[in-house]
Length: 121
Image (tube, rainbow, N blue to C red; front, side, top):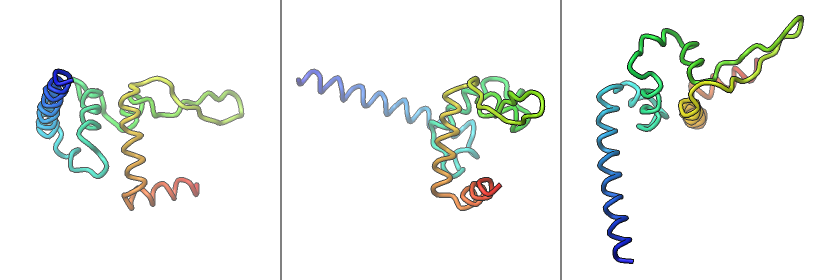
């Protein structure tokens, strides 16, 4: 048992060291995202992974939505007009955006007002 406890402590210290390094890297690359409400270090890291080495390929919100798989797809034909969810895109980035939206809808007044306005539409 003592050996297992020592191994757990060593792994715990290693995880904390990696978390500190990741926090430093994220704050260095995207300090404005770290200041935004409802966005954690891991969420920013997911977004940086999504963007990758070529941030110029994301030129609009629509391009980011497409990469994350959160843009609606029109499967309509003829006179019907409907949308379905995209099953493609980066699923980890999609989950990160979902977490941000949930946190902001719970705590941020501007996001709450936006959600209420969209529900009314």
